[in-house]
Length: 86
Image (cartoon, rainbow, N blue to C red; front, side):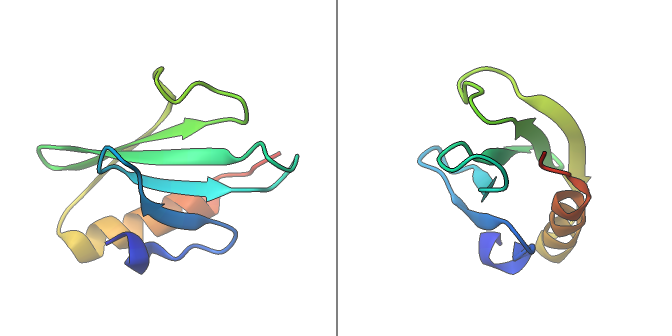
């Protein structure tokens, strides 16, 4: 599913915990913006981490995406498109 997201300006993959992780290098080099999708019963809980945030803490909630894999990918791609990294 991570490959299906392909949002402009974002690199999407799977982190070591099996969560979907999208990174954007907009802004300062080496300090990425990170969006993490964590599985729950109906889909993914999406959190935003600003540059320098601790990924072990709770990020800023960006909502939930639900549905089949195609819907999850579409919704996550739309959500990434709405995030302004500045």
